Image 1 (cartoon, each protein chain N blue to C red):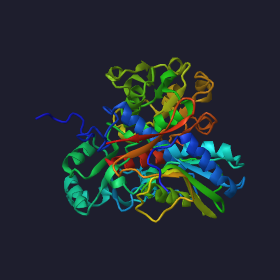
Image 2: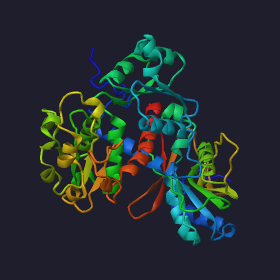
Image 3: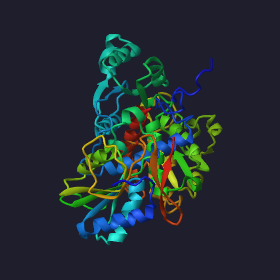
Image 4: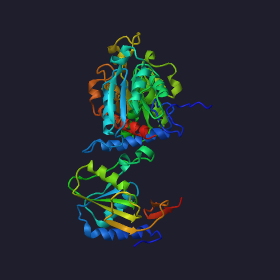
Length: 318
Length: 167
Protein backbone atom coordinates (compact mmCIF):
# COMPACT_ATOMS: atom_id res chain seq x y z
CA UNK A 1 0.00 0.00 0.00
CA UNK A 2 1.33 3.35 -1.10
CA UNK A 3 1.76 5.72 1.84
CA UNK A 4 0.43 9.22 1.41
CA UNK A 5 3.56 11.35 1.35
CA UNK A 6 1.74 14.59 1.86
CA UNK A 7 -0.93 14.28 4.57
CA UNK A 8 -2.31 17.70 3.61
CA UNK A 9 -3.71 16.57 0.28
CA UNK A 10 -6.71 14.33 -0.40
CA UNK A 11 -6.67 11.55 -2.96
CA UNK A 12 -7.50 14.04 -5.73
CA UNK A 13 -4.43 16.11 -4.83
CA UNK A 14 -6.58 18.89 -3.32
CA UNK A 15 -5.86 20.65 -0.04
CA UNK A 16 -7.61 18.84 2.81
CA UNK A 17 -5.60 20.15 5.78
CA UNK A 18 -3.18 23.07 5.88
CA UNK A 19 -0.27 21.91 8.02
CA UNK A 20 2.82 23.35 6.35
CA UNK A 21 3.83 25.23 3.21
CA UNK A 22 6.60 22.66 2.75
CA UNK A 23 5.42 20.35 -0.02
CA UNK A 24 2.50 22.48 -1.21
CA UNK A 25 2.38 22.58 -5.00
CA UNK A 26 2.65 26.01 -6.66
CA UNK A 27 -0.91 25.71 -8.04
CA UNK A 28 -2.38 25.38 -4.55
CA UNK A 29 -0.28 28.27 -3.27
CA UNK A 30 -1.54 30.43 -6.13
CA UNK A 31 -5.12 29.25 -5.60
CA UNK A 32 -4.93 30.44 -1.97
CA UNK A 33 -3.39 33.80 -2.92
CA UNK A 34 -5.90 34.42 -5.73
CA UNK A 35 -8.86 33.48 -3.55
CA UNK A 36 -7.57 35.79 -0.82
CA UNK A 37 -7.43 38.59 -3.39
CA UNK A 38 -11.18 38.18 -3.92
CA UNK A 39 -11.81 38.32 -0.17
CA UNK A 40 -9.96 41.65 0.15
CA UNK A 41 -12.87 43.27 -1.72
CA UNK A 42 -15.43 41.57 0.54
CA UNK A 43 -13.86 42.99 3.68
CA UNK A 44 -14.12 46.53 2.26
CA UNK A 45 -17.86 46.35 1.58
CA UNK A 46 -20.87 47.60 3.50
CA UNK A 47 -21.58 44.00 4.60
CA UNK A 48 -18.20 42.38 5.30
CA UNK A 49 -19.55 38.85 5.14
CA UNK A 50 -20.29 36.08 2.66
CA UNK A 51 -22.58 33.09 3.32
CA UNK A 52 -20.04 30.46 2.18
CA UNK A 53 -19.54 28.55 5.46
CA UNK A 54 -23.01 29.09 6.92
CA UNK A 55 -23.78 26.29 9.37
CA UNK A 56 -20.15 25.12 9.71
CA UNK A 57 -18.60 24.81 13.17
CA UNK A 58 -14.98 25.91 13.43
CA UNK A 59 -13.08 25.29 16.66
CA UNK A 60 -10.06 27.43 17.50
CA UNK A 61 -7.94 25.08 19.62
CA UNK A 62 -5.21 27.15 21.18
CA UNK A 63 -2.92 25.02 23.34
CA UNK A 64 -0.52 27.99 23.40
CA UNK A 65 -1.66 31.54 24.05
CA UNK A 66 -2.04 33.94 21.12
CA UNK A 67 -4.26 36.96 20.78
CA UNK A 68 -3.62 38.22 17.28
CA UNK A 69 -3.61 34.92 15.39
CA UNK A 70 -6.67 33.64 17.25
CA UNK A 71 -8.52 36.89 16.65
CA UNK A 72 -7.80 36.98 12.92
CA UNK A 73 -8.89 33.33 12.54
CA UNK A 74 -12.05 34.18 14.46
CA UNK A 75 -12.81 37.23 12.32
CA UNK A 76 -12.08 35.26 9.14
CA UNK A 77 -14.47 32.46 10.17
CA UNK A 78 -17.19 34.96 11.10
CA UNK A 79 -16.83 36.78 7.77
CA UNK A 80 -17.47 33.41 6.11
CA UNK A 81 -20.62 33.06 8.27
CA UNK A 82 -19.28 30.03 10.17
CA UNK A 83 -19.91 29.47 13.87
CA UNK A 84 -16.67 29.86 15.82
CA UNK A 85 -15.86 28.36 19.19
CA UNK A 86 -12.66 29.50 20.91
CA UNK A 87 -10.93 27.17 23.32
CA UNK A 88 -7.82 28.07 25.25
CA UNK A 89 -6.98 24.52 26.25
CA UNK A 90 -3.94 25.07 28.43
CA UNK A 91 -6.28 26.44 31.06
CA UNK A 92 -9.11 23.92 30.79
CA UNK A 93 -9.06 20.19 30.11
CA UNK A 94 -5.37 19.32 29.84
CA UNK A 95 -4.86 20.65 33.35
CA UNK A 96 -7.51 18.11 34.41
CA UNK A 97 -5.45 15.35 32.81
CA UNK A 98 -7.40 14.83 29.58
CA UNK A 99 -5.13 14.10 26.64
CA UNK A 100 -5.09 16.31 23.56
CA UNK A 101 -6.55 13.55 21.38
CA UNK A 102 -9.38 12.94 23.85
CA UNK A 103 -10.19 16.63 23.79
CA UNK A 104 -10.24 16.58 20.02
CA UNK A 105 -12.36 13.41 19.90
CA UNK A 106 -14.92 15.05 22.18
CA UNK A 107 -15.08 18.16 20.04
CA UNK A 108 -15.39 16.04 16.90
CA UNK A 109 -18.37 14.36 18.56
CA UNK A 110 -19.92 17.83 18.79
CA UNK A 111 -19.97 17.88 14.95
CA UNK A 112 -16.92 20.07 14.41
CA UNK A 113 -16.12 20.76 10.75
CA UNK A 114 -12.70 22.34 11.21
CA UNK A 115 -10.00 22.65 13.84
CA UNK A 116 -7.60 25.58 13.88
CA UNK A 117 -4.72 24.38 16.05
CA UNK A 118 -1.94 26.30 17.79
CA UNK A 119 0.46 24.23 19.90
CA UNK A 120 3.89 24.71 21.44
CA UNK A 121 4.91 21.21 20.30
CA UNK A 122 6.02 20.80 16.68
CA UNK A 123 3.82 18.25 14.91
CA UNK A 124 0.74 18.49 17.15
CA UNK A 125 -1.55 19.52 14.25
CA UNK A 126 -0.30 16.49 12.24
CA UNK A 127 -1.22 14.19 15.11
CA UNK A 128 -4.70 15.72 15.26
CA UNK A 129 -5.12 15.56 11.47
CA UNK A 130 -4.26 11.83 11.56
CA UNK A 131 -6.85 11.09 14.21
CA UNK A 132 -9.89 13.04 13.03
CA UNK A 133 -12.49 11.66 10.62
CA UNK A 134 -12.03 12.45 6.96
CA UNK A 135 -14.80 15.05 6.93
CA UNK A 136 -12.87 17.26 9.39
CA UNK A 137 -10.23 19.75 8.25
CA UNK A 138 -7.23 20.90 10.31
CA UNK A 139 -5.41 24.22 9.97
CA UNK A 140 -2.04 24.66 11.62
CA UNK A 141 -2.01 28.05 13.36
CA UNK A 142 1.58 27.61 14.53
CA UNK A 143 3.26 24.51 15.99
CA UNK A 144 6.45 24.83 18.05
CA UNK A 145 9.43 25.79 15.94
CA UNK A 146 8.05 23.95 12.93
CA UNK A 147 5.55 25.92 10.84
CA UNK A 148 3.07 28.77 10.77
CA UNK A 149 1.68 28.39 7.26
CA UNK A 150 -1.01 31.10 7.30
CA UNK A 151 1.58 33.63 8.49
CA UNK A 152 3.91 32.62 5.65
CA UNK A 153 1.00 32.89 3.21
CA UNK A 154 -0.06 36.34 4.37
CA UNK A 155 3.55 37.49 4.14
CA UNK A 156 3.90 36.40 0.52
CA UNK A 157 0.45 37.82 -0.21
CA UNK A 158 1.67 41.17 1.15
CA UNK A 159 4.83 40.93 -0.97
CA UNK A 160 2.76 40.13 -4.07
CA UNK A 161 0.46 43.07 -3.34
CA UNK A 162 3.33 45.58 -3.30
CA UNK A 163 5.87 43.98 -5.65
CA UNK A 164 3.61 42.07 -8.13
CA UNK A 165 6.30 39.76 -9.59
CA UNK A 166 8.11 37.25 -7.36
CA UNK A 167 10.64 36.26 -10.00
CA UNK A 168 12.60 39.54 -9.86
CA UNK A 169 12.95 39.83 -6.07
CA UNK A 170 15.69 39.75 -3.51
CA UNK A 171 14.24 39.03 -0.07
CA UNK A 172 16.00 39.16 3.32
CA UNK A 173 14.69 37.40 6.44
CA UNK A 174 16.30 38.90 9.53
CA UNK A 175 16.70 37.80 13.12
CA UNK A 176 16.01 34.68 15.15
CA UNK A 177 15.64 32.15 12.35
CA UNK A 178 16.52 29.23 14.64
CA UNK A 179 13.41 29.46 16.81
CA UNK A 180 11.13 30.80 14.12
CA UNK A 181 8.31 28.75 12.61
CA UNK A 182 7.45 31.88 10.64
CA UNK A 183 10.86 31.96 8.90
CA UNK A 184 10.56 28.34 7.82
CA UNK A 185 7.11 28.95 6.32
CA UNK A 186 8.29 32.13 4.60
CA UNK A 187 11.28 30.37 3.03
CA UNK A 188 9.16 27.53 1.63
CA UNK A 189 6.56 29.97 0.27
CA UNK A 190 9.10 32.33 -1.31
CA UNK A 191 11.11 29.60 -3.01
CA UNK A 192 8.00 27.80 -4.30
CA UNK A 193 6.74 31.07 -5.78
CA UNK A 194 10.01 31.52 -7.66
CA UNK A 195 11.85 34.22 -5.68
CA UNK A 196 15.41 33.88 -7.05
CA UNK A 197 17.29 35.12 -3.98
CA UNK A 198 16.29 34.58 -0.36
CA UNK A 199 18.77 35.66 2.31
CA UNK A 200 18.69 34.95 6.01
CA UNK A 201 20.51 37.36 8.29
CA UNK A 202 21.32 36.81 11.95
CA UNK A 203 23.97 35.88 14.50
CA UNK A 204 25.55 32.41 14.20
CA UNK A 205 23.74 31.29 17.36
CA UNK A 206 20.31 32.04 15.85
CA UNK A 207 20.74 30.60 12.33
CA UNK A 208 20.18 26.83 12.04
CA UNK A 209 23.21 24.99 10.66
CA UNK A 210 21.35 23.27 7.81
CA UNK A 211 19.35 26.27 6.62
CA UNK A 212 21.27 26.53 3.34
CA UNK A 213 19.72 23.23 2.28
CA UNK A 214 16.45 25.18 1.92
CA UNK A 215 18.05 27.23 -0.86
CA UNK A 216 18.83 30.41 1.06
CA UNK A 217 22.02 32.47 1.45
CA UNK A 218 23.27 33.10 4.99
CA UNK A 219 24.65 36.48 6.13
CA UNK A 220 25.94 37.33 9.58
CA UNK A 221 26.67 40.93 8.62
CA UNK A 222 23.43 42.93 8.41
CA UNK A 223 24.94 45.64 6.18
CA UNK A 224 26.02 43.11 3.56
CA UNK A 225 22.82 41.13 3.82
CA UNK A 226 20.49 44.10 3.32
CA UNK A 227 22.35 45.48 0.31
CA UNK A 228 19.91 46.03 -2.57
CA UNK A 229 17.09 43.87 -1.22
CA UNK A 230 13.46 44.53 -2.26
CA UNK A 231 11.80 43.03 0.79
CA UNK A 232 12.88 42.84 4.45
CA UNK A 233 11.07 40.34 6.64
CA UNK A 234 11.91 40.98 10.28
CA UNK A 235 11.39 38.18 12.77
CA UNK A 236 10.37 38.54 16.37
CA UNK A 237 13.02 37.80 18.95
CA UNK A 238 11.48 34.75 20.60
CA UNK A 239 12.17 35.62 24.22
CA UNK A 240 9.85 32.92 25.56
CA UNK A 241 11.56 30.30 23.40
CA UNK A 242 15.09 31.19 24.45
CA UNK A 243 16.20 29.48 27.59
CA UNK A 244 19.86 29.04 26.66
CA UNK A 245 22.48 31.73 26.21
CA UNK A 246 21.84 32.54 22.58
CA UNK A 247 22.34 36.27 23.00
CA UNK A 248 24.39 38.53 25.27
CA UNK A 249 21.47 41.00 25.63
CA UNK A 250 18.58 42.51 23.69
CA UNK A 251 20.52 45.79 23.48
CA UNK A 252 23.47 44.01 21.90
CA UNK A 253 21.12 42.33 19.41
CA UNK A 254 19.57 45.68 18.44
CA UNK A 255 23.02 47.16 17.84
CA UNK A 256 23.91 44.48 15.26
CA UNK A 257 20.60 43.20 13.89
CA UNK A 258 17.94 45.76 14.82
CA UNK A 259 16.42 47.42 11.76
CA UNK A 260 17.15 51.14 11.96
CA UNK A 261 16.70 53.86 9.34
CA UNK A 262 20.46 53.73 8.60
CA UNK A 263 20.40 50.01 7.90
CA UNK A 264 17.15 50.25 5.93
CA UNK A 265 18.85 52.81 3.65
CA UNK A 266 21.14 50.00 2.42
CA UNK A 267 18.19 48.21 0.83
CA UNK A 268 16.56 49.40 -2.39
CA UNK A 269 14.82 52.78 -1.96
CA UNK A 270 11.40 51.17 -2.50
CA UNK A 271 12.06 48.20 -0.22
CA UNK A 272 9.18 47.18 2.05
CA UNK A 273 9.47 46.08 5.69
CA UNK A 274 7.40 43.25 7.14
CA UNK A 275 7.08 41.96 10.71
CA UNK A 276 4.77 39.16 11.90
CA UNK A 277 4.10 40.86 15.23
CA UNK A 278 3.99 41.34 18.10
CA UNK A 279 6.98 43.66 17.72
CA UNK A 280 9.71 44.20 20.27
CA UNK A 281 10.37 47.86 19.50
CA UNK A 282 13.99 48.76 20.12
CA UNK A 283 15.05 45.08 20.02
CA UNK A 284 14.55 43.82 16.47
CA UNK A 285 13.10 46.99 14.95
CA UNK A 286 13.37 50.71 15.59
CA UNK A 287 10.07 52.52 16.22
CA UNK A 288 10.77 55.01 13.44
CA UNK A 289 11.09 52.17 10.91
CA UNK A 290 8.13 50.21 12.29
CA UNK A 291 5.89 53.25 11.83
CA UNK A 292 7.69 54.61 8.75
CA UNK A 293 6.46 54.81 5.17
CA UNK A 294 8.27 51.64 4.03
CA UNK A 295 6.56 49.59 6.75
CA UNK A 296 3.69 47.33 5.63
CA UNK A 297 3.21 45.78 9.04
CA UNK A 298 -0.41 46.89 9.52
CA UNK A 299 -1.48 45.93 5.96
CA UNK A 300 -0.07 42.46 6.81
CA UNK A 301 -2.62 42.19 9.61
CA UNK A 302 -5.48 43.20 7.30
CA UNK A 303 -4.37 40.77 4.57
CA UNK A 304 -4.09 38.04 7.22
CA UNK A 305 -7.87 37.97 7.49
CA UNK A 306 -8.33 37.47 3.73
CA UNK A 307 -5.68 34.72 3.67
CA UNK A 308 -7.39 32.86 6.51
CA UNK A 309 -10.77 33.24 4.80
CA UNK A 310 -9.24 31.78 1.63
CA UNK A 311 -7.66 28.82 3.45
CA UNK A 312 -10.81 27.96 5.38
CA UNK A 313 -13.11 28.22 2.37
CA UNK A 314 -10.85 26.14 0.11
CA UNK A 315 -10.49 23.43 2.79
CA UNK A 316 -14.21 23.34 3.56
CA UNK A 317 -15.00 22.90 -0.14
CA UNK A 318 -12.57 19.99 -0.70
CA UNK B 1 -40.78 32.03 -30.28
CA UNK B 2 -37.74 29.77 -30.23
CA UNK B 3 -34.92 29.32 -32.70
CA UNK B 4 -33.40 25.86 -33.04
CA UNK B 5 -29.89 26.97 -34.04
CA UNK B 6 -27.36 29.17 -32.26
CA UNK B 7 -27.30 32.64 -33.72
CA UNK B 8 -24.17 34.78 -34.00
CA UNK B 9 -23.31 36.27 -30.60
CA UNK B 10 -22.50 39.63 -32.18
CA UNK B 11 -25.94 39.77 -33.86
CA UNK B 12 -27.64 38.89 -30.58
CA UNK B 13 -25.62 41.57 -28.77
CA UNK B 14 -26.84 44.18 -31.29
CA UNK B 15 -30.42 43.02 -30.67
CA UNK B 16 -29.98 43.09 -26.92
CA UNK B 17 -28.57 46.62 -27.12
CA UNK B 18 -31.58 47.78 -29.15
CA UNK B 19 -34.00 46.23 -26.64
CA UNK B 20 -32.29 47.85 -23.68
CA UNK B 21 -31.72 51.31 -25.14
CA UNK B 22 -35.20 52.78 -24.46
CA UNK B 23 -35.08 51.53 -20.87
CA UNK B 24 -31.79 52.89 -19.54
CA UNK B 25 -30.55 56.29 -18.40
CA UNK B 26 -26.91 57.41 -18.20
CA UNK B 27 -27.12 56.67 -14.45
CA UNK B 28 -28.15 53.02 -14.90
CA UNK B 29 -25.52 50.68 -13.42
CA UNK B 30 -24.59 47.57 -15.44
CA UNK B 31 -23.17 44.62 -13.53
CA UNK B 32 -21.75 41.72 -15.51
CA UNK B 33 -21.43 38.25 -14.03
CA UNK B 34 -17.93 36.81 -14.52
CA UNK B 35 -16.84 35.73 -17.09
CA UNK B 36 -19.21 35.97 -20.09
CA UNK B 37 -21.53 38.49 -18.45
CA UNK B 38 -18.59 40.79 -17.69
CA UNK B 39 -17.54 40.79 -21.37
CA UNK B 40 -21.12 41.62 -22.35
CA UNK B 41 -21.42 44.37 -19.73
CA UNK B 42 -18.29 46.01 -21.13
CA UNK B 43 -19.70 45.97 -24.67
CA UNK B 44 -23.22 47.05 -23.61
CA UNK B 45 -21.77 49.85 -21.52
CA UNK B 46 -20.01 51.29 -24.54
CA UNK B 47 -22.94 50.60 -26.95
CA UNK B 48 -25.40 52.34 -24.63
CA UNK B 49 -23.06 55.21 -23.75
CA UNK B 50 -23.66 54.99 -20.00
CA UNK B 51 -22.04 57.53 -17.67
CA UNK B 52 -21.60 55.20 -14.70
CA UNK B 53 -18.74 52.68 -15.08
CA UNK B 54 -19.82 49.03 -15.28
CA UNK B 55 -19.22 46.56 -12.46
CA UNK B 56 -18.33 42.87 -12.40
CA UNK B 57 -19.48 40.19 -10.01
CA UNK B 58 -17.98 36.77 -9.26
CA UNK B 59 -20.68 34.90 -7.38
CA UNK B 60 -18.47 31.98 -6.23
CA UNK B 61 -18.86 32.92 -2.54
CA UNK B 62 -22.67 32.97 -2.85
CA UNK B 63 -23.35 29.83 -4.90
CA UNK B 64 -25.77 27.22 -3.58
CA UNK B 65 -23.61 24.31 -4.83
CA UNK B 66 -20.51 25.07 -2.69
CA UNK B 67 -21.30 22.01 -0.53
CA UNK B 68 -21.07 19.75 -3.60
CA UNK B 69 -18.44 21.50 -5.66
CA UNK B 70 -16.27 23.62 -3.34
CA UNK B 71 -14.15 26.44 -4.70
CA UNK B 72 -12.73 24.76 -7.78
CA UNK B 73 -12.75 27.46 -10.38
CA UNK B 74 -10.40 30.39 -10.01
CA UNK B 75 -12.30 33.15 -8.21
CA UNK B 76 -12.00 36.68 -9.57
CA UNK B 77 -12.55 39.68 -7.32
CA UNK B 78 -15.93 41.36 -7.65
CA UNK B 79 -15.53 45.03 -8.53
CA UNK B 80 -18.41 47.49 -8.33
CA UNK B 81 -16.96 50.96 -8.91
CA UNK B 82 -20.16 52.85 -7.96
CA UNK B 83 -22.55 53.12 -5.04
CA UNK B 84 -25.21 50.41 -5.27
CA UNK B 85 -27.46 52.14 -2.71
CA UNK B 86 -30.58 53.53 -4.40
CA UNK B 87 -29.32 52.81 -7.92
CA UNK B 88 -31.16 51.38 -10.94
CA UNK B 89 -29.20 48.23 -11.81
CA UNK B 90 -29.16 45.76 -14.67
CA UNK B 91 -27.48 42.40 -14.10
CA UNK B 92 -25.91 41.03 -17.27
CA UNK B 93 -25.19 37.35 -17.98
CA UNK B 94 -24.42 35.36 -21.11
CA UNK B 95 -26.78 32.39 -20.72
CA UNK B 96 -29.86 32.34 -18.49
CA UNK B 97 -30.68 28.77 -17.49
CA UNK B 98 -31.68 27.55 -14.00
CA UNK B 99 -31.62 31.03 -12.46
CA UNK B 100 -29.38 29.92 -9.57
CA UNK B 101 -26.48 32.14 -10.62
CA UNK B 102 -28.83 35.14 -10.72
CA UNK B 103 -30.12 34.36 -7.23
CA UNK B 104 -26.50 34.21 -5.97
CA UNK B 105 -25.74 37.49 -7.75
CA UNK B 106 -28.75 39.24 -6.17
CA UNK B 107 -27.74 38.01 -2.71
CA UNK B 108 -24.23 39.37 -3.24
CA UNK B 109 -25.52 42.71 -4.58
CA UNK B 110 -27.53 43.33 -1.42
CA UNK B 111 -24.31 43.07 0.60
CA UNK B 112 -23.15 46.20 -1.25
CA UNK B 113 -26.31 48.17 -0.46
CA UNK B 114 -30.01 48.42 -1.30
CA UNK B 115 -30.54 49.06 -5.01
CA UNK B 116 -33.66 50.92 -6.21
CA UNK B 117 -34.35 48.22 -8.81
CA UNK B 118 -32.60 45.23 -10.39
CA UNK B 119 -33.42 44.06 -13.90
CA UNK B 120 -31.82 41.20 -15.82
CA UNK B 121 -30.33 41.12 -19.31
CA UNK B 122 -29.12 37.86 -20.92
CA UNK B 123 -27.64 37.24 -24.33
CA UNK B 124 -29.63 34.00 -24.59
CA UNK B 125 -32.45 32.60 -22.49
CA UNK B 126 -32.40 28.81 -22.86
CA UNK B 127 -35.34 28.09 -20.53
CA UNK B 128 -35.07 25.40 -17.85
CA UNK B 129 -35.62 27.70 -14.89
CA UNK B 130 -35.56 26.19 -11.38
CA UNK B 131 -36.32 29.49 -9.63
CA UNK B 132 -38.92 32.22 -10.20
CA UNK B 133 -36.56 34.45 -12.19
CA UNK B 134 -37.03 35.99 -15.62
CA UNK B 135 -35.00 38.22 -17.94
CA UNK B 136 -36.43 41.65 -18.80
CA UNK B 137 -34.07 41.80 -21.80
CA UNK B 138 -32.96 38.76 -23.82
CA UNK B 139 -31.04 38.69 -27.11
CA UNK B 140 -32.84 35.47 -28.06
CA UNK B 141 -34.92 32.74 -26.50
CA UNK B 142 -33.73 29.34 -27.66
CA UNK B 143 -34.39 25.68 -26.96
CA UNK B 144 -31.46 23.46 -26.06
CA UNK B 145 -31.30 19.85 -24.88
CA UNK B 146 -30.94 19.71 -21.09
CA UNK B 147 -27.56 17.96 -21.22
CA UNK B 148 -26.01 20.38 -23.73
CA UNK B 149 -24.19 23.44 -22.48
CA UNK B 150 -23.75 26.81 -24.16
CA UNK B 151 -20.73 28.94 -23.50
CA UNK B 152 -19.75 32.44 -24.57
CA UNK B 153 -16.16 32.81 -25.79
CA UNK B 154 -14.12 35.86 -26.74
CA UNK B 155 -11.25 35.80 -29.22
CA UNK B 156 -8.12 37.98 -29.24
CA UNK B 157 -9.85 40.70 -31.28
CA UNK B 158 -12.70 40.87 -28.75
CA UNK B 159 -15.26 39.14 -31.00
CA UNK B 160 -17.86 37.18 -29.05
CA UNK B 161 -19.13 33.72 -30.11
CA UNK B 162 -21.55 31.22 -28.66
CA UNK B 163 -20.29 27.65 -28.52
CA UNK B 164 -22.48 24.59 -27.97
CA UNK B 165 -20.90 21.74 -25.98
CA UNK B 166 -22.39 18.31 -26.63
CA UNK B 167 -21.73 15.79 -23.83
